Length: 273
Image 1 (tube, rainbow, N blue to C red):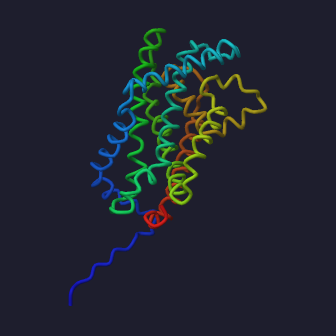
Image 2 (image 1 turned 180 degrees about the horizontal axis):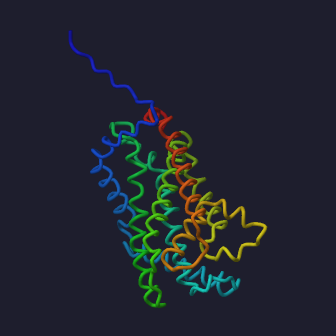
Image 3 (image 1 turned 45 degrees about the vertical axis):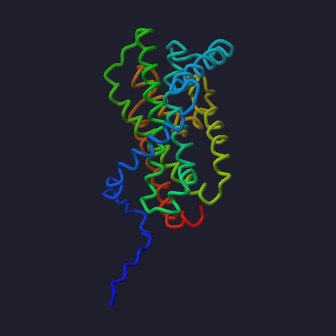
């Protein structure tokens, strides 16, 4: 009697199959490179858009918030202060947006080929990381121009960088699974990100927030990630062990929640997408 092999979906959400993900690392790299190339293919400025966007944003925010509104920037030159916030926010916003559409943007792969579906949200980080590298180079040039040298806290930048990625992926896992079922989610997320931006101290210092609204801002995980970028690289801002723990806890909690939702519906993606 011929042997039969039955392939069934694994419903255990705690089983991440890290070895399987590692075995597909080349696919993750290929998809990330493909997304990066697609972003700048046949673009007039090419990769230059990764320079134009943060520079233009810093110019506008410095004019509107620094000159017109007259908001303070913790004693740091406004362009430098704003660029540091833009670097952190852009990484988070781009990663979340790309993770959200990662499943529906690869419908042909999802419906025809088997591979760990977590590959797609992870590969979607490529564009955000590419833009981060360029933005950090601009930030380094601006720091030299203004005479700022990172202090002993600079190594903690990696912690806040990891927190931003974990937060973006965690929310992105939830929204990507939701988007596979309801495609209009991809239109709602950019609006959601835009609204989130205005309640996050990206282009203004936290000291400008009225005291009766501080608690609301303190509960925003991106507040402390952006504060952490500025504190670790520029040596400004309020940061203590409690803020570090809270940032890590909220990021991990949202990641675990997003992972649970993603794994819960992973076996249905090929049918409902």
